[in-house]
Every structure is written in structure tokens, then in C-alpha cells.
Length: 178
Figure 1 (spheres, rainbow, N blue to C red):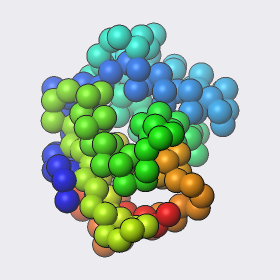
Figure 2 (tube, one colour):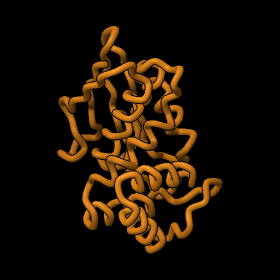
Figure 3 (cartoon, rainbow, N blue to C red):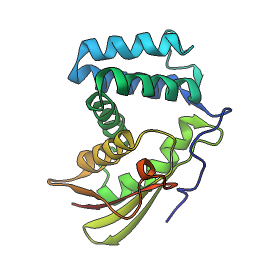
Figure 4 (cartoon, rainbow, N blue to C red):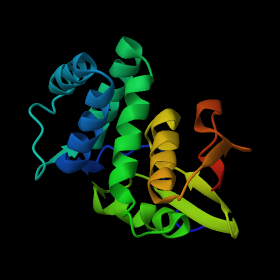
């Protein structure tokens, strides 16, 4: 696998405002009130008004995400992850190309030790992605699915296999077919 190594979180890690904005746009697709809730929680965690050109402490964003899950559930996180995934995959890309650039795109939008993604193509229409970011598994899963669906010509199937951070593992592993 390519570069999925990294720790679950780092105090020095930062995320750019553009990524936070895309996440908020995805949440708003599901519920405008959930977006308002997340914006309020982000402000309470020290993020304030999000600007695309700014960099924010990843720890503050993760704190806000945790509060949001308790307040509104995981649907908002999944919507935000899918929105970010839609942005990663260019319409001209194939699924393997889109999944292969996911880690580089993630690293351009994060500074410090914030984990990453690794992709390995197994066959002509299937592959495996390992996620070792500090984000909740539901967000990573939706991001990977969003990347694949945007690049696919049709159906995408995603299944968690072998390891999951929710169960204490260092990474989540997903097998995809398209």
C-alpha cells in the first residue's frame, strides 16, 4: 500500500479552511440546521468563522466533529465526507487514478502528522484502500466512497475488511469494486 501510515492525531496538525468549507457544504446538502450546529460547535472549539485561505488546528476540528456526532449523529459526517470525495475525483479520472491521488490531495490540505490514505489496485475493477487519518471512520468511508463514485461509470461497492479504528486498530481497510 502507498503511504497510509501516520498517527491518529497530532496537536501540531492543521487542516485548511477550504477542506472545512467543503465539509460544511456537504452537511448542508442534508440539513441546513446541521450545518449551523457544526458552525456553532466549530466556533466553540476555537475555529470561528471558516475562511478557505486559513489553516486551523486539526485537534479543534476533531473536537468539533466529536461534539457534532453526539448532537446530530453520523449522517452529517457522511454527507460532509462524500462532498469532499466529490471534489477529489476529477470527472476525467478513472476510479484507480482518483483513489491513487487521494493521499496526495489529503496531504495538500493537511499539515503536520495527520495520517493518510493508501490505495492498491487488486484487479481491473477492484482495489483496497487503507485509511489512517484521525477522522471518524464514517467520514473516511464516505470520503473514499465519494471519490470512487464520482470517478466510476456506474455502481461502486465498498466493504470494510479486517481492521477498523472504531475497534482500536491503527487504520480502517476497505475493499472496493466498481
